[in-house]
Length: 234
Image (cartoon, rainbow, N blue to C red; front, side, top):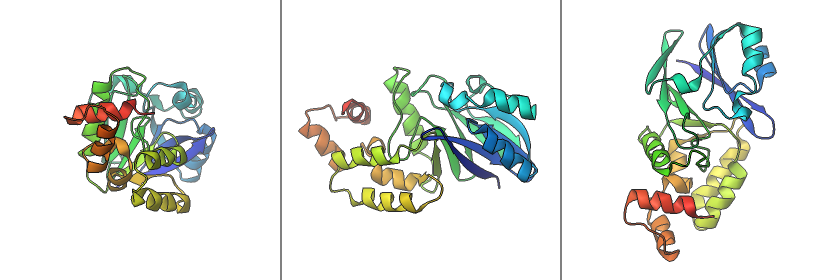
């Protein structure tokens, strides 16, 4: 089984190391100094440096890590869907999840998923690609993963996300339960089960959300229409 380490940098960005007994992969390595320290302390050899997408706030540590570790840099846009990375004999799967950007990918191994800016804890990313249909398909794909899947996102947007979720569903007590769990955790994450209860962009088939769309005279007849309508609410 592989492990994951989360590193905060900037105001709210997260970098990650996926690692086994000897080898590691750096994903969105903006916290490059902390990553180098962790690698040295744990006697780990980095075999790959990569990203969830190409926005600079996620790629800013690449050059430093490449220079200091001599690890291979793999541009995330070159991954094929379901590409398999082998790390200490374990498999990391790469999912192409276009929507936030056209080159967005997620990394899945064991029960954890690094989602970058595709799926946040409590919300989803902005659709900078302009292709909402692709974004919907990517979110729908991630929703098919098991409830126990742990979501490690690219930013800590939890406070604002929960404020907006409460605005849409003021009677949803699960939002308060998740907030209490969030403030008590030393690492920022959510399970897919929690997301299904709090994240409006995963709740488009729930009665409360459908009623909200009806109240706002927004299309709701199909899943796609409901998700697209939710993305239009501010």
